[in-house]
Length: 473
Ligand code: PLP
Image 1 (cartoon, helix red, strand yellow):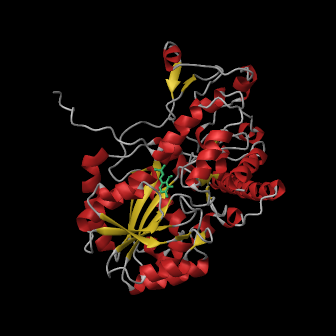
Image 2: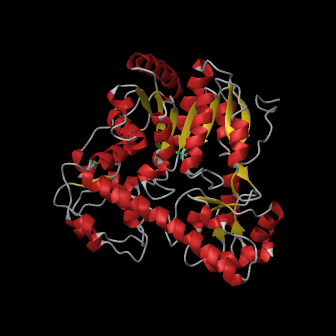
Image 3: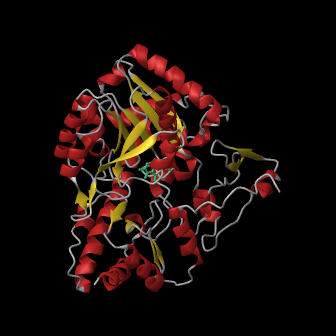
């Protein structure tokens, strides 16, 4: 027999499986509501104007004028490398020397849908933007890009948080949010003095479970979502949390809870902070959607900042996948707010010892984009508008879906569609209803009835409402 004859076939990933099935469907009306990535109102992936601007400084006008947008241009690295006068810039893209028409290799430049942003073209900022700096591709330190780390933690806890001035934060760059969580679970499995289990909300993001199981920590749940109201089960959560053994670890979604879209209100967080303090629990915040819930960066950080104000020491994972649209760049951070500077130095030394044999050091480019945007006032203003634009589009799609369901004549209570927040909506549809929606209407979503509101657009919301009414009436 071969080495691996004993290896059994594992189950496919629940969410990626939905996308595979969607791709195979030939119905022109098909909709993919499974994917956890933002889409614009044309259903297309969205490169944020602030991100685009942070990377591209070249005088684009001649290039844009010479490109034919009616067809997609396929240019391979090979063709470019054949040119002796090409250079590779920081984005890993290739462009011509000065005075030649410059071509930035990047999918958006060659997409027929690319819209010219006049403002971006009008005011290039040669000193600050990434391409012009001709940066090298050396390794980052084990803990990542220092400026990125500093800006990330400031974004989460606020510039003037005393933990920063006192040097009490340990912040390292992770391989996006998932990698940050994984650094956290690895550190906790080794050093957390309490019980080696983690209390997760029921339900939670599916990946939380293996992230802790892989480091041999046990999983427990506290009540969170109430199927009767499709809202937050505040009393259930409080009751369960108040019974968690003292000194345990509790995981909290900072905002835009995945998969339910249900967030505690500010007054709920205040009460939860008290009971978590009374039980002497260590709160671990997963913040993958800062800005995505309300459109306001500070508002979405309410829980994290309130817990710190209340004197909690916290763990925190951050992701820039959604709020900067940097999915594939893998930009994220993991932080521990410690008791004092000395403790922080010791904790940092151990976190680095864990990272070194895991992946040695994190990826470079995404962290540079984030640091550039967060430190440049003009880019930061554009970014905050970008985030608000995405959040507002999602909120308006929630309104439209609800209104169209009413128009269809649905008598069900769909108020939760607009009460929930962030990218996801827990519709309350049952697995058989979801199956019908997929089979009869080519609408794809996970079996738990979760839809990604980012997949809804002006052009498909009526069809979606019609289909949802048909399967739920
Ligand atoms: N945490 C939650 C709750 C999420 O929903 C996600 C992404 O879907 C992540 C963390 C991590 O995402 P990434 O690894 O792409 O940053």
